[in-house]
Image 1 (tube, one colour):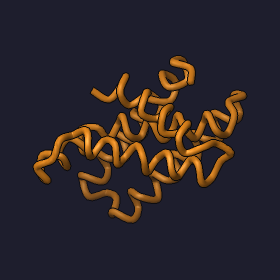
Image 2 (tube, rainbow, N blue to C red):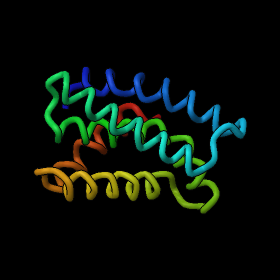
Image 3 (cartoon, rainbow, N blue to C red):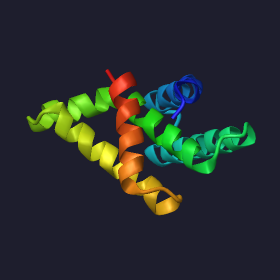
Image 4 (cartoon, one colour):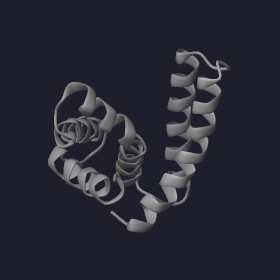
Length: 125
């Protein structure tokens, strides 16, 4: 996957997600509202990428990977709380993302796992 693609997706998601997270933390959004906003954000990002000529599979992979990169502090916290190495939590999250992409798009789980894990390894720290 193109380095350029993930570098387009990350800032776009991060800006909007940060704004919605601030609204959630301040009590302006309930958990359900935040979840709905988050899902809408991901759908808008997917549509935007498709409109810019990115294939559905690449868009899905980029978005899943970007979400994991942006969730990295939460993954770290989960590993710490459970007393397990970060790599175990990270692998599980990447595997779940790869399964989701493989189930919904014409791509093997193995390839999806490889792409998502490469992006998370590069940008997740």
